[in-house]
Image (tube, rainbow, N blue to C red; front, side, top):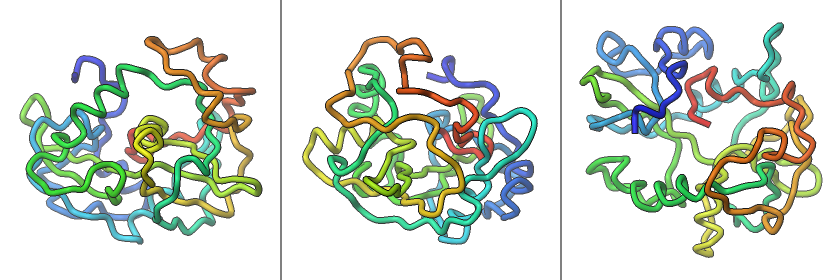
Length: 225
């Protein structure tokens, strides 16, 4: 599993705290790195995120640009509540079969022995544990991100989790973002235009009219998008 991780997403905790101008709590002398949730081999503690921390994280997500930092969520106050995935529009044109199966098989075990209600009810959380080298690390769990646009809510992260809930006929906990200061990086589509595939399509086929300069860089603040 760890062989496929993005090695660039192994951020010093102090760097993330500096970027979001907020503490990530717990003992910073031990949990010095922020990694993707799937990189944790053993979970030692799970704490639900405060509204203040969630806001700090999201407000400091930049657009993926080399020359300047533009923060599309700078003025948003995120809200967390359920919605029916059927009511969303989406950006991604595909569902990766292997990722879908991995979620179905491993989602409950991701949180170790902690009693969580699965992805449909999981709230934003900080997860502390060790990685495959037994180094103490932490991860951030953020529910699917939805931008509340004029016509319909548009899903910008959490495609596979949302699809699972759609297929199960249940609602999903999502983070809703309003007053977004940037155009979407794609033209929204409906679920019926999404295909389940075995391999990722070419980048130009993954979204309709992709504009990379408006892509939200979640990894900048340690969110595994």
